[in-house]
Length: 199
Length: 268
Image (cartoon, one colour):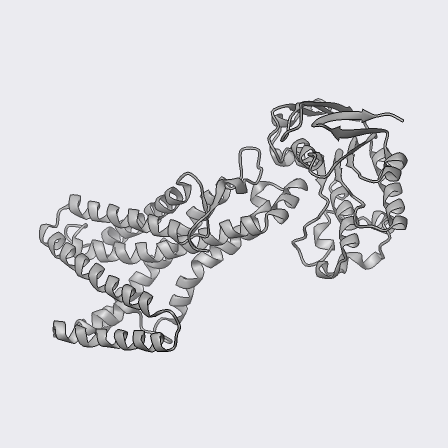
């Protein structure tokens, strides 16, 4: 079981950020558009330089090659990209139960990517990421393109996976009701600072 | 060899064909008349100048002058590679990558061909070395320019795909592997097409020139085959080297995609 720790992480205009996320904990991050939420996730995923220190358990971000870090600390972007022809080619291993829980039929692996809706792409991007068995998750608005019913379905599935796998998760969310349902803790970016929101 | 000498008035007669074409494009309002005339004038001037340079070089025949000529050709080709790219690497990297890859491939293949195959005495005899290097550099330059252009444009256009693959834990080489293969294909396709069509669809320029200049066709064919093979090797190794170095330069030490290292160039 590993926690995700940020120390003096600075991206864009944001002041230095310190944050620790426990194994299996979901920390929600909100803030105005352009506040720097996605950039913070990118920095934790080592896709942007940040000048601080990020640790997963005992492993420092810069002590392992970039691809190995990102295989452990995996970011799922708000808009996913697809490069093979079919869904199945993007999955590292078959995940029938996960795909069923996300509302897909058994033959989804044969579906053509070009025919997927934005909502289907978003759910399948989550399955694609989790098929690689990451140890921490960075979720950038993972339900932005989904209706209410599907949003609840995906939330429940993500919560169970994160709990079972003891993954620390940083989840960018806008909707207050969703934050209330999934967040262990909630932080908001205000005036270039990360502020904890307490009920 | 029976060479039919060409006089200046015969060249002027040929130029009238270009003038006629320029007039046609002008009346058809294609907007190409000026470019056509400038290109034709450049051809005549540049070839006349290189003719004078080659006459002097052939007369002197020393290794230093041949090497200096080769270096000038290499630097001009490097500049041409940069000019042909829509997106190029900042800080002179595109020029450096193009020049180094052409130097590695075109020069080594030329020297190898001179020493091991043609075997003139001395090996750098300008009548052989300069045309061979020119052919190789010209074709390698096209391959490298096409390969680099395709690679940098793909990285710019498909940034989301590359970054999504990085997010999933792919190495930088895997994340841009498809684009590297596309770039190699783009660079090598002209020379592969030229080899496939040689003698069936078209008679290659050098062979035609040799036959017109009075060489026996069998000898011209042998030289053409030699040139085709050396061009294929030079273009292939050059494009491979350029695409490998450029794709690595598109990522930093942490394997992050660095499209900020690209700047928009002149072609687009």
